[in-house]
Image (cartoon, rainbow, N blue to C red):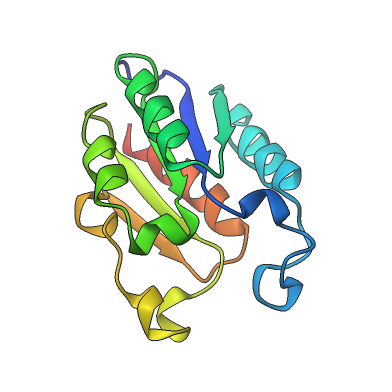
Length: 146
């Protein structure tokens, strides 16, 4: 896939509740706001974003498989699957594109179980604790990386 292909932005379980779920942790922006931010960021560079959300691990894995040969990079906030899913981790290497793991909160300053990620070891970069701006940073990183 060419470096000018679309960037896939994936959001896992419970991220559809952004804006109402624990705003003191995740802020007041909704998932639609996050997707709009990603699209605006990419469009400034003449790039496109494809966005997908699911609360289902299997649906996320199927969408990752479909990215092979289509998308040029993946930005993923796996939500709680970060800490539990070897299957998601294994799927993320299949498209053979750079992967940026994003977390709105600083997972390392939270509960102990959130400190481990199955995704981080295969990610090109990890962004945590920057709020929804972390998504824009991830998009910029992938575009700059080429």
